[in-house]
Amino acid sequence: MRVLMIGDVVGNIGRQTLKTYLPKLKQMYSPDAIVVNGENAAANGRGIQRAIVREWLDAGIDCVTLGNHAWGQGEVFDFIDEEAHLIRPANFPKGTPGKGMTVLSTKGGKLAVINLMGRAYMESALDCPFRTADRLLQQLSHNTYILIDFHAETTSEKQAFAWYVDGRVSAVVGTHTHVQTADEKILPKGTGYLTDVGMVGPYDSVIGMERTAVIKRFVTQLPVRFEVAKGRTQFNAVLFDFDKETKKAKKIKRIRIDDDMPLIG
Ligand SMILES: C=C(OP(=O)(O)O)C(=O)O
Ligand SMILES: [Mn+2]
Image (cartoon, rainbow, N blue to C red; front, top):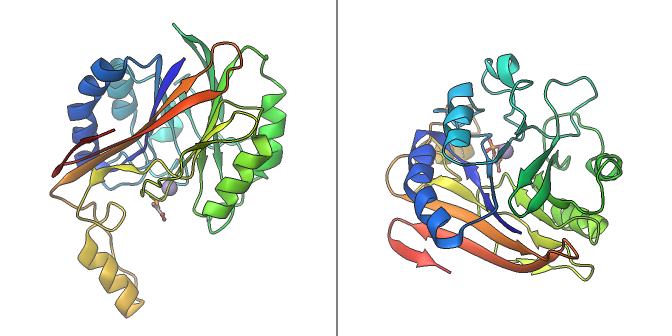
């Protein structure tokens, strides 16, 4: 089973970059499933709209995950329960609209995708992501590949979580910081791991936002409106090959394409 996980797509520029590279990557790697984090996909970088989800699913993306901006666009409440393969962090409190796990039937087999959110330095009041994972994993049969999008700020929480589920899932991929880490590894019991897959969006930015506004925020300590940056772009993703028998990771390849750098990998 080969799964392509694409990092947080940021704003219109991120969506356009995704549109540019997706066909090439599908042709190059022929993934059995494509998962994209869309929590910053709206024009202002906060949330996602129905039209974006529809466009992505029609373009061959199999699952869209979210994060702390899940509710950034008011219209999401109108469709989040209608889109089978749009998921938001499973550890939002019980009764929250939407769901945190979906199971995809792919040509390579069944792939469960779970979205969780960390709690360290994250605003929302969330249930424990570790215990939420325990609960969800009990619902899955042993012949299912399992990918977890762990949307969190700190490396320590992401690493701790991956060790906690090592051997129980195929891979844990961190999202949210928008910076791709270079620590891909396969843990001792076979779970693939990457602290953060990075983003699809502006290259000359502060994690996707226009840098002068962010600098002003830090220098003046006053509230400043952030806009998605313009200009050169970057495309960050990670490709997993999972073993058919064990459902565990056997190969991990980071993908990073920047406007001024050739396709690495
Ligand atoms: C990327 C970040 O924020 P957001 O969830 O707004 O994208 C971040 O704070 O690291
Ligand atoms: Mn986020």
